[in-house]
Length: 618
Ligand SMILES: [Zn+2]
Image (cartoon, rainbow, N blue to C red; front, side, top):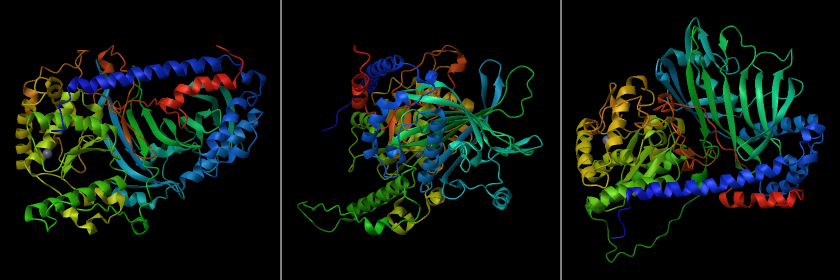
């Protein structure tokens, strides 16, 4: 047998190993930072270009590998701050043009907050939006999740430009507009220039590995409503905006603009793609009139997704010509035919979800999931005709499902699970479905059923089991776990169920599954609920009891190609009960680095810096 049980500690050990590796890189990055800090501060000489020579010399190297319409390759380095601003404006316009061809997925998850005397602001209710952005004309979006009823019709009547950028206040009722949360992908889509804005240079600052120029932007007096007001960070090689933080000025009477913190990542040569936007409103100081209070995370991904309509199927015919050399190359037996059929359905579904940007390509996270599945399989002597595969749904709501022999787990669910035992709990339920032969989705072996728009995915796909199968899968899963290496490690899994139970009434949007079965029914956790009985009492105030993590702590999603990877950041010590933030959204703070800053490149960076700048010699 090829497979072997990997000790659960091994996965964690691997993780800490990568952590250590990462720490080494950090030290190196810091070393290069120090080198740079030793250079004279060019801002004092009002000559930001003077210090750019080294980095500009490196730039052509990068430019050759990049998109052809990268203008700065031909431009001399700016020598005055006004020239820098002109370059920033130019790069922003170029990004707007570049993105006009793109229709990334945009997801907003937000939690309305209420003040808990001890835990601080905690979720009171939540909202979830998922759609595709269309940057082509005016920014628009189409939603995966359809709002039913009048509101939608009303929305249609108002043109997108008129519709608010932030949201709506009607008397004291507050309504969220999905578009509002993603508005700050750009500072100003139409008039980002020196005619409409004053740029005040503030300082230099590192964001992660990237040295930035920081500008405060204020709209000119007559620039009109809805102009950006806040701060931008501009990387100091090509002068792309990498972060925007602020709001929009002068809302009209019925409008309200959120505050936003918007981050871009250098995932392809030459462009920094809007990837994360954090919004937050609310004031919990004593006596504050607290009309709205929320925290919201917006994520964009799938920039490289093909437009919904394409003829790729015609031009890109895949020929997987594998000669069938089984001894009896004959027609399939009825059972073999059934399995082929299910395989075809499974492949169709996986491919279609990937094409819609809802499923990450196969990758490292799958290896972690697969190891846990293997551990359960081996110890239970499970031999299946086809190996079980795992894949990651790119979305936040906590859900799992399986199609054929593929187990799918959402990014959000992996994020909030406290430990490997809890992951085993989640996977064992789906594995149980597979072992029990609860196959769903054979209808998707018909290819006509794949022909729908990406936005209609949730209307066309569904993998919900009947309650009897759910109960049977839970029962079987408990058996599998009891015989697995996780048998003695299910305490945190039980606590997770308890924590989920405690928060479920406030988190209905996060708990709304879109493809699989809900983990809760009517606010009560049903999935694997039995594990909660053996778990210790839930104690929000006990600092070393971690029942669930905040969103975004484990899985990192690449906004360009949808790949997912495990986050390798060092855990930060919890010092108060408010630090635990189970199931909660938090601000984003990605470590910025330039494209190609792979571990190898980063490791050699200090040397390159040293040779380019002869001054500091060891
Ligand atoms: Zn199930």
